[in-house]
Length: 146
Image (cartoon, rainbow, N blue to C red; front, top):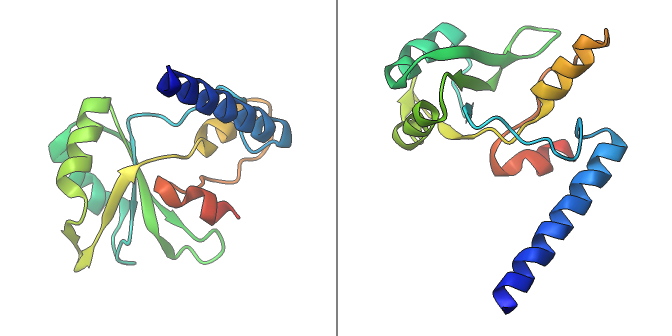
């Protein structure tokens, strides 16, 4: 019973935080959740391109989108990327096989994307507003946003 009470309290607290973030505009809505078929890849070599990652990760399945995030002013790589797979199963397989893999002489880190920024951008774009790109990923998202 205590475990169920703790779980219910944790769920209520999470819901309250999500509603507060939605009111502040940091979440598109309180029900927003990250896509389960998108990987966040970081610690990339600055020479690694979208095409390189697509070739490397395509062995795990169909890639719908692969984007190395770049500085909007200089075009330089920010050393991280998002890779969207056709299915969650393909995404999960890539996650387990590619975390800590060597790509262009760098040990990359792979995690499931925690960003809902793309969803927010797509909603804004549908209303005619300009998007600002994507947020971070993994467990460091909150620290990066601060």
